[in-house]
Length: 214
Image 1 (cartoon, rainbow, N blue to C red):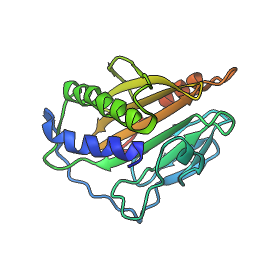
Image 2 (tube, rainbow, N blue to C red):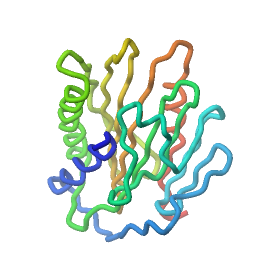
Image 3 (cartoon, rainbow, N blue to C red):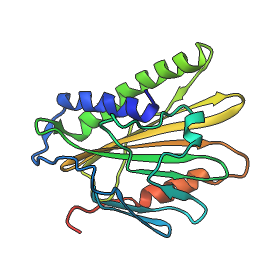
């Protein structure tokens, strides 16, 4: 199971534990296109969110082949969760993946419970790293923090830093709830000399907006 699928599956199970009710019932319609790319802007159609990327970054709604080499699996036809958008720097291969899915009618959400779920997810991440790269790999896990996004009721961020073959990586994930959807933002920063990918990530996330009434 690829890393995004792993986190999505974990959170879909975990949301049955949460605190403040989501009231709407929404169903996926995968025949609706994810959205449209207009220059450096993305406008969602299947799910109502938008964002923009720096000029030197790329956007696609198709799985980029290089992600396979970084430990992600290409979504198959039987996958219930489909990533809506991939963003990446074609030079450094730092990337961001965004996945929306309707919340289950019985699911309940609160900021505290979302932060708790993100914290527990770090343990599954460490286990996966060990399975893929052996027991010698060491990940430094960052703190769990609330993460403000425009139009989003609850969101939290967690990240880990580690090195593979001498290259430092930062793997981060943001889990959020914007009624009536839950969403997952998974990013990887590959630390290459001279890159400004962290600043690019900050700008991307600052541009993110959930806009159900627009």
